[in-house]
Image (cartoon, rainbow, N blue to C red; front, side):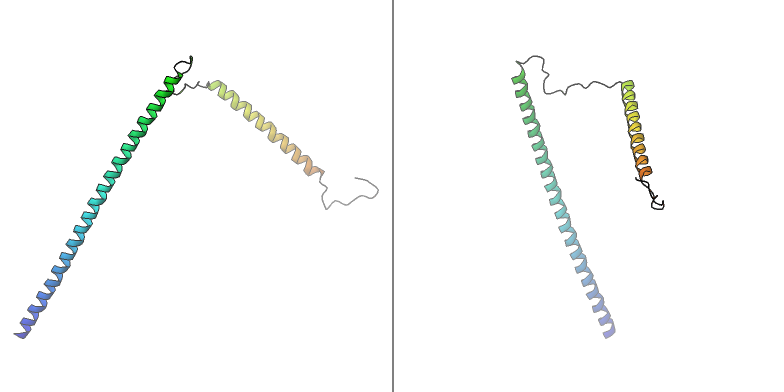
Length: 137
């Protein structure tokens, strides 16, 4: 009988430890869930603050542009500041001609530099070439 009592007490102790561990795990999960909820609330608050700041900045910019447009209203031939000026479109033929001219110029410069380099190399006397007596260089 002592063996049965011992076995029963060991099993109850094991169940108690397992129950305590399960309770600790539930407590940890509850704390983590609360921390996540707090972080979500903080993010939402930060997001709404950013949106409010952006709205204020847009309103401030629009007011400044309206004021500048009103100041320029007396000056003729000026476009309003709210629209960017139109850019002229480049013609493809003109771009091709400019590219061709640039390539030709680059080719000429490269050939000139190569010719100068070759002339310098030919002007250098090799060390293996004997000096001739009686000739001045």
